Length: 121
Image (cartoon, rainbow, N blue to C red):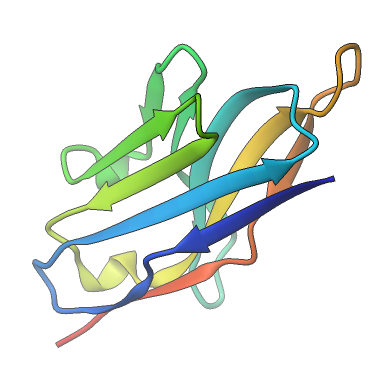
């Protein structure tokens, strides 16, 4: 099994900054990608950003230029630095990892428990 533990959510004013962190632990042989998704009330979960093991990153158009994702392959951690936050960024943010637990095992998705980010004055 693989566990993802998130930290760093909270309340921030519009225009402010916040950094989310996530650490993966457990039975890990290889992690193909790590990333962040978010889900606002009444909306579907959406990709915010993800990063491959080769450090190629993808961002949702709504966060390009404001959010930066980074990954430490040695520590199995991923961080999301969020700047110029807007009220529409308010959501529960979920860490995701696409993990191969043992050699020859199939990769599968794992999710963190979610952390609330609220952008409000």
